[in-house]
Amino acid sequence: MLYFVFTVDGDWSQYYDPALSEEKRRPSLQKLVDYVKEEIKVTEALKGKFVHFIHTSPRARDFFLRREFVTLFRQIMDFQGSLGIHCHEDDPRKEYFYSDQKRMREVIGFFCEALSENRLKASAYRGGYLAFSPLTIPVLEENHIFLDFSCEPGRYLMHGSNLVSDWRGAPDNFYRLDYQDHRRRGSSNVFEIPVGIYVENLSLAKIQSKAKKLKKRAENSNIIVSVLTHSFNFGNFFERRKIVKALKILKQYGTFINAEEAHSKIVEEEKR
Image 1: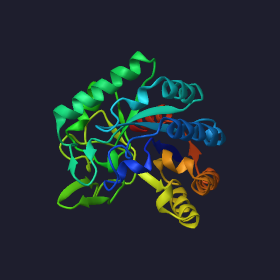
Image 2: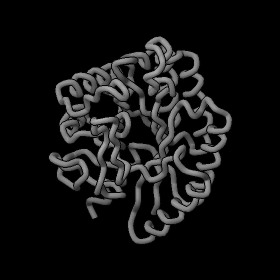
Image 3: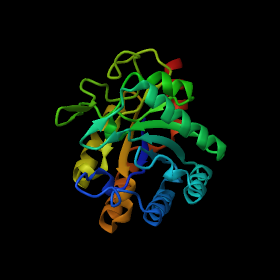
Image 4: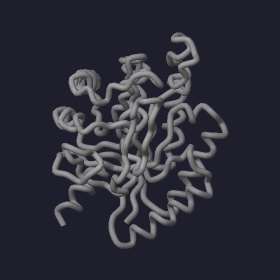
């Protein structure tokens, strides 16, 4: 069987542009609220089953814990969706802190506690720029997060002399993360679900082609991969229409599930 987990990273496009002033790089409350509302509307076609990854970063540490967003996040969970934490522990193009375990522990712990206080729960994690360090694995376990969605198999991203993200040699299906090397199968309690379809990086024809290949692979074993896009794409009519078309294509080849369902299926698979 082929399963897709539709995932939306809750970012805004200005965040990534170091040429902008600090003020212009900050998120707009109304725009981001509208983006999340569009996510909810579009995913009605998936019976609400998707993962919204809540952005947190030095630039917007608790911006998305405002009442307006908390209300929408509860709606996502009520509609069978899931929530995740999307840590952008970086100053884009300048500094990256994903290997600083103390810092990651403070950030993830703070955000999980804040969500809990608002009767919300994070079921998954994804690093900004798809960055990940094995030092984050124990931190996720401590916070009862047992799914990571940071892997894009083969990805190797450098910004200048900074290594941002490295998934060379990583499996292209779900696996337990290794405590020493996140690109290997291991014995941790955190499962990796890799990106299978990166919507904004592919044409609709390429999306269909990849879906066909995944479906063929799934004839012999269960495949679970994520479908990736970003909140800011929901603010653009043409990008939003592309997402809708992509989801229609993918529904012909696989079944969409939420994070909790993905975890249950992986645990069942391991018992066989």
